[in-house]
Length: 275
Ligand code: KIV
Image (cartoon, rainbow, N blue to C red):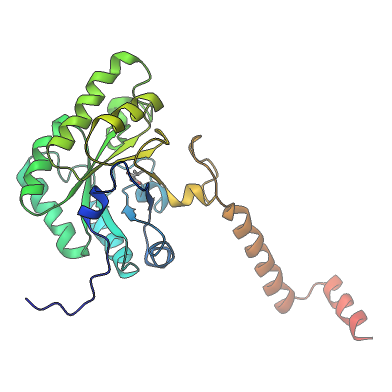
């Protein structure tokens, strides 16, 4: 086998080995331009099916198709060289059987060139996670608040608020770790539960609205940049780009209109300046 391209991309075993070590920094990413900016800084970029809501204005993630995920996965891969890139398996593309999950996940891997896939569900998806892993497809699992089950849950609700819910959520975490997932996203989970799961399982936990004691963190990039006017409560804003964009566009519009359609005031000001 000849290898002509320098292998600079981080690997799944490297991410897996960060359990209990240097925290794993992850963000969602949906297109090539932002991928270029994020890639050298992050350990892992997730082409999340949240793109249905963020980029396409959908109400939830249920309407996202495999083709849409592949389109955005390709775009992110074109802008990325170093980070691990994980592409979400959308609703309806993997739940039916391990064989169908394999066929669709293999399509995602082949057509995008991504490093791994992510799928939602704990104990009920363990067989599929094992099936994919044994056939060359690394899987990141996603438990707790699983947005593709929004209709069953009756909304986006924090999981594990009462101690009675903990055993089932812990069993989910153990099941996906035992099945060979290389990492597990803990979304919208009561903090002490997420911390206990992190201490109890052998694979890295990646928190979102869970616990800072997870092995890594992920946020939707648009949320942490201040582009979402109504971000989830737990999101820390690291920039406020929404108002900055509005201001820049206002300045641009003024500039264009000022140049092409001078108002009376503008003409007067220009005359005065020329005097
Ligand atoms: O789709 C997504 O962006 C996700 C993250 C929120 C973990 O699954």
